[in-house]
Image 1 (tube, rainbow, N blue to C red):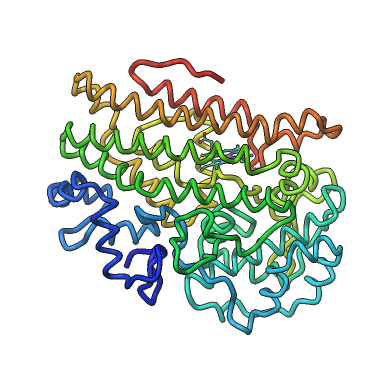
Image 2: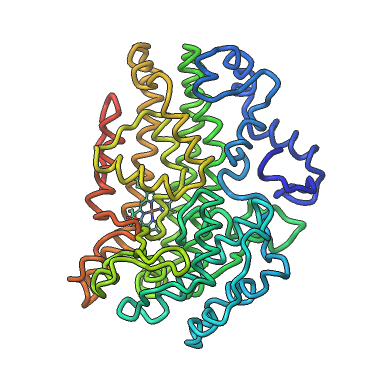
Length: 453
Ligand code: HEM
């Protein structure tokens, strides 16, 4: 079943029966070139090693095993917005996080929470919501008094279920992109499509008002827009395996258009989010356990009571944990330098295992660049370079966002000498790192163009 369709066969796009909508989505969203290419690719044993697709299976079904869909990308379909009554303590606190933070009583509320049995969570959707709620509760508990007032311990009523739920999902026990962007949405008007940005709202919020809301929703929308690109990326790799230059050029063109749409989407952040609110109000809640404030306090990390007395370190939330761009890097054969590759590998540990696997599978198989080189055809080379340029342009626009939302407020900030704030929430030395991921993209091109930033 397509992961974007819920168990009752209702589609994210509205109230139409799942089977009908699935057929429509598949026909509309997947270009004929890809649909027709799969029977050829499926018979190739090399393809089965890279992305196992047997002849009985459609692309759509295959993608569902990676928890992705061409319609909604990496977003969880029809997420739950409340846990069953047994978990009311979590519902009550997580759904009012900002109120309790503002009232200054979040720590008391959390400390009074019952110790609940995570084994009562039975479905994937319940686990995803529990992770979203518990990571929000943990972030609020840790950062409510700012970077100078952090606690040494996370109480066992949060620490134990958060740790166990994360283990069950195969992700990290801290606020991450997989929950806060991909599973943090509910539909506003059931008669309208959830793909419409204005028809979704967040389930769990953090301080920062509209800036916080749009920060998460715009990341979510970018992940959603990248959806068709997953099929094009796979189609591209399959075309390389099949030695089919025409299909490769078509998929490169389609992928380029998808990346351009993603770039248009992220640029809207400038008009929707306020840099100072982002930097001073929201961002502190997204910092890692073990980041500079923990070092400054002499804690080394956060002790998860009931799990271990050893302080635990986990990186903060970052869209670098989104699979959207890494999948294109993998399919296009963009190789980052060793330290960046190591950072990306770390970021993959914060992704859902199914998304991680998709990236790993796309990294396998013959190199797209080598194939393009062997083709020695100007049209193919240009299609490849144009697609890489679109990814580099996305990275340039992203760099401008980071400069405006992190670097500039940081310069204005009297605390600018504090090392931790100069780094990304994911722990990177931001601008240097982002420029080098862009250089790796343009360096992969046959004819490098210049960048504006
Ligand atoms: C206000 C909005 C945003 C800010 C402030 C921001 C900030 C950052 C920072 C600081 C990093 C460096 C890694 C780290 O240490 O965390 C990063 C990396 C990254 N971000 Fe964003 N980001 C924003 C929006 C987005 C959006 C909407 C996307 C879309 C998916 C995105 C995708 C990425 C990617 C893919 C990386 C890894 C670097 C690369 O591959 O070039 N970011 N971001």
